[in-house]
Image (tube, rainbow, N blue to C red; front, side, top):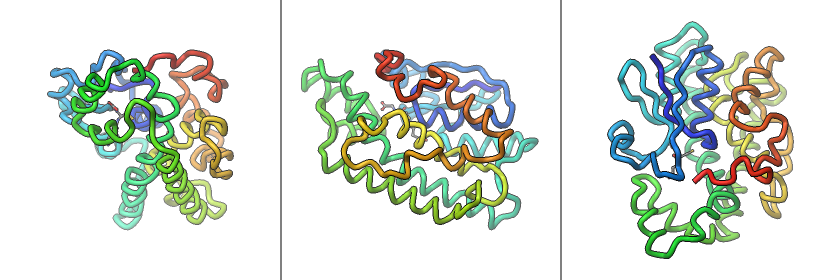
Length: 258
Ligand SMILES: N[C@@H](CCC(=O)N[C@@H](CS)C(=O)NCC(=O)O)C(=O)O
């Protein structure tokens, strides 16, 4: 049995949902409510001491970290392979995974929090906010830096630069190809998709003055074989208002994700 403890609004959770959908694996979808700090509750921390989502529980065994989870699923359920053949191809895919984790995944958090999620902390006192930051095993520094008013323009700018670097690097690799690692969808494409999805959510107004223009295009991994597109799109939007990405925050669907 596969259970995914995750959050509808989390890009890291979205990666794993995409992977599960792509592989056609049924799973129990257990939503972790950030507003109730369920990800910081002792029961959850016993499964995932990092206090972040997602966590996969497979036959009672917890597996943590979205990219690790995807690689685990690909190893345990190889029927629909999502890794290239051969060690060199797989090393290439893993290098993209590590790059995506280090650069765009970290970068997109800054505008996401600054322009959307931070408002949920606005009503807290400094002391309360400090306690929220301290309670997060992996994110104390991130929250302290953000504060209750969001990141500085300089920090947002740096995150857009990092996203622009990612786009440039992907465009160079793709150069007319559809998938990043060879001629099929791999975990690398899935890994970066939610970042593009989030950029689309943030939109030009939310993304501030200097949004990389190439972000406006469709995500590279969604430009793939037509048969794969609906799977990706369905999985990506299964928890949101379909065809209404750009306005879903405004529509109140994500009124209080925290
Ligand atoms: N490296 C981890 C990072 C997971 C992560 O940062 N998850 C975010 C949601 S995308 C989270 O749970 N944040 C909780 C918080 O900010 O308190 C992974 O890929 O699973």
